[in-house]
Image 1 (cartoon, rainbow, N blue to C red):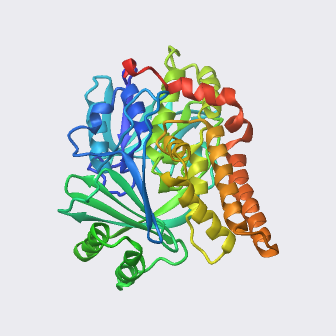
Image 2 (image 1 turned 30 degrees about the vertical axis):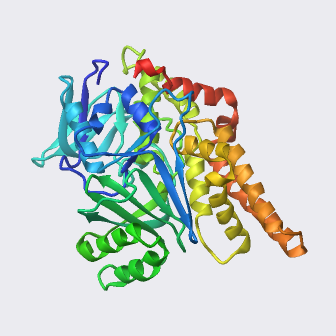
Image 3 (image 1 turned 180 degrees about the horizontal axis):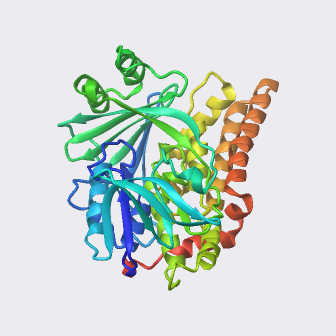
Length: 453
């Protein structure tokens, strides 16, 4: 938009979205918004500052702060927010440019000729079917994309479901933290999204979702989840929302989909239509903004997108440069947080909590929080910390002295770690993820000096 190119944006629905995903903008995401000239979109939406992650497990708790990182040229704080309000601000910002046409409509098909996408056929708000041509079509129609398969064949996996609602007229005692409870069988989160609204969400297995209609969900939240939340302000807020928000309880699927390269000319797939990960680390918006920023920088020198061969070459380099550690972190973290009656798995879960806790050592906490916040995109840093967590778990299972049973479970922890990390690194591309020059290219693609922001 800011490069003067004509842009036609077709949105399925221009009303404010009502969803409970995309409610945390990590510090790295704020940096990318600033570099795209969009940081003011976080203003005037009652967004709340977030400085830390508070973790709770079996009566223990700790608060982990985003570190002051000298290599990160921005403020070490994120924003908690109503996703729909941010979307509306972004739309307003886009529509303010004279070269942008924002229109409500539903895209039906991609127009393709001899392997080159030439544009789209869409139905506008009046029900008229219209053909729109463009040298470059960007598909970003979300996790339920009906256009994805026309451009790239990605496999979508449903991992679980999140159940969420809003507790209104409430202020947490610590509104500047994301509160993560290591509950059983799956985690739950509580966080402030506006000055007087709190989001409560609990993860449930994909194969056993309690019914909202017959009251099973309310009973599950009250009897299973709430007792595992620390007594006091957090639990009171959680229960208050259940009582007051019976008609507003929503469920959404947590999905995973590795990014696959699109070899068609004239089209790019972005956002959840392109790549999804477990939402437990709240990195979806940051990853999407990172992709936009990398593509913007790659395509900016191209005088005309009609040169589809040149654009495709640059897009292929984008698939290499974009490889980062957040997809792997989301996958591993979501696996570790699952509570089952397995000594090896519980050893990993306990060790993850202990490793994150500040009592375990400053560099561990600050290192993991820098990765979580998008302040350190180096994949090798993540691999280092995951190896340390695995070794910590093995040591925990072997103490106070080794035995054949403990040794067996420690080996199983090692095998589990290899399986979780290895499979995902394979999906992401081992070469692209771990070769330092690729990580350096990624950092260079968006890192600027603080004065540039």
